[in-house]
Structure formats: C-alpha cells, structure tokens
Image 1 (cartoon, one colour):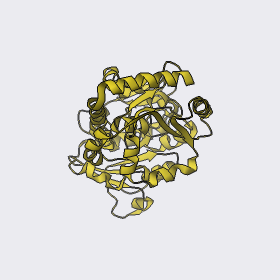
Image 2 (cartoon, helix red, strand yellow):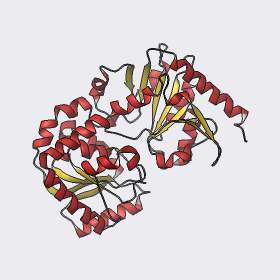
Image 3 (cartoon, helix red, strand yellow):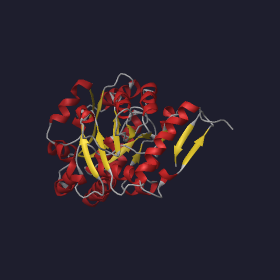
Image 4 (cartoon, one colour):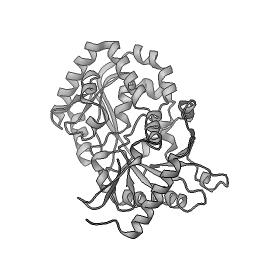
Length: 353
C-alpha cells in the first residue's frame, strides 16, 4: 500500500499531536475569526454566554500579534481572502493552536481553497459534495460543517418570534441574488423568469450592493423577509448557503432546485417534507412557477402553525451556535476526532472519521 510522503506525514503528525493535547484538556478556549464581519451581528456573543468553552469572535488580524494570544482552537472562516496567510502565521507562533479552516467557498476556486487547506491542521468543508477538491496529503479532512444563519443571532431570532408569526405576507415569490460573473446559468434563469413574471420579487444585484443590504438594521432585514410566504433558493454552484436557513427562520417555505447535493445531509427527508421544502421539478422558468404555486398552497394549508414550525426548526438546529458546538464537540475524548482514516482511491485523503 502507498504511504503518506514524509514531509506531509510530519505535518499530519504535528496536527494529531495538537489534537491529542486538546483532547486531554478540560476547558477549551476557542477563537472564531472572520474577515467578513458584516455577516455577523455585534450581539452574537450572547449566543455563547452559557457555552462549556470560552469563545471569542474577532475580525481584527491584530489579535494574532497579541503577546497574550492563548487559544486551543482557532476557527478560520474561509472566504477566499487572507486565511492562507493567517493559517501560516498561526503555525509559526510560540503558542500554536489547532487551526480549523471552515471552508465556506469550497464549491468553487479549488486552487485557492487547496492552498489554504494545506496549511491548516484540518479543513471543515461547508459543501461536502466538493470536499475532495481540497484533499491533500498534509491536511486532515474533518466532518461536514454546513453554513447556517449568520445575519441574526439565536437570541435575537427568539425575541422576534411573535412578530414573525403575525407578519402579513404576500404571495409574491421572494429571492435576491448577487450577480456573480461565474453564475451565468443562474443569472440567465432569473432574467428569463423576470421577463415572464415581472411582478414577482426575484432579482439580481451587483456585488457592490452587498454592503447596502447589511447596512439595514437586522430587525428591518428580518421583517423584509417576513413579508413573503415563499422564497426561491438558487445556488451559485450547488451550494447550500445561508439563505436557505434565513428563509426557514423567517417562516418562509423555500423552493430549491431538483439537484441539491448536500440537502439530504443537512436536513433529513422527513424534515424536508414536514417543514416543507419544495423541490423544483426542472431548473427552468416553468419549474420555478410550478414550485411556487405548490409552495403557496402548502403555506396557506399550514398557516401560522407552519411558520412557527419552520422558525423554531431553524432556530434550534441551524444557528452559528449549533455549528460551533458541533465543531468543538469533536475535540472531546471519545468523539469522531479520535480516529484517522487514510483513503488512497483518489489521491491521498486523510479523514477524521
């Protein structure tokens, strides 16, 4: 059988050494670092007030230069920005933490993702269908860690439940998407749909408009979502983004493409049926219109009870606290991180299983 090259084995052994040390600690200090701070409200720390681990959120790179830097685990959000440089810095400081790269964009730009992944100790793919694109002989592939609700904290969402439930909603289809240059098929479908159904609220925006959306107060953003019954989810490249969970949190029924690779891994078929989540029968204008009509009937059938069900499902299962709890739980004795599996079928894949 083939073996892991020596230079990569040394890095893997170093990562496993950090992991072993962390597994022996009773209390953990975790740093969550993101360069896209606008995605997160300032009160997110309230979600972690009663956690079993110390949790710090930061978007300032100066934190890595602090002489008192002392974290067991650093979660780097992979936004295709500076995570490669930051991971390298973290691997070369006196107090070396376990560098966990949460790859938000591993469904595209495989070269950029792979470079950052090779420096991290482990990579947590947000999009499991594309995890093999980051496989290499130097990095542990951790379990799937999907995206989640990031623009609202769970504390805030819980406080807004009554307003979400009583909100007056229209039958128009809701869906705003950024006009990515490499999303030609999606952009074309939206343009065709808008031409056929100009009164629906489905549109694209230039990427330069992104800050404008997040400049609105979080309450205003939430109540804007809650004006609708149904939202369309059109991925950039098969990815499950935050908007699926945002829609559910605001009580909307999401409609999704016929091919959505990770959906069954993130939400069970039973829950997809009970919420419900409606699949388009074809990736076309007709497919959208048909799914919209079916979703409206289901929304009206379930009424406020359905809104509460979707809201609480998202709140209880798909907030940032849920994801971080899942990640940190893997660093405890007797968990999945206690085993390593090497797979040579398509190159060298080293999994934490």
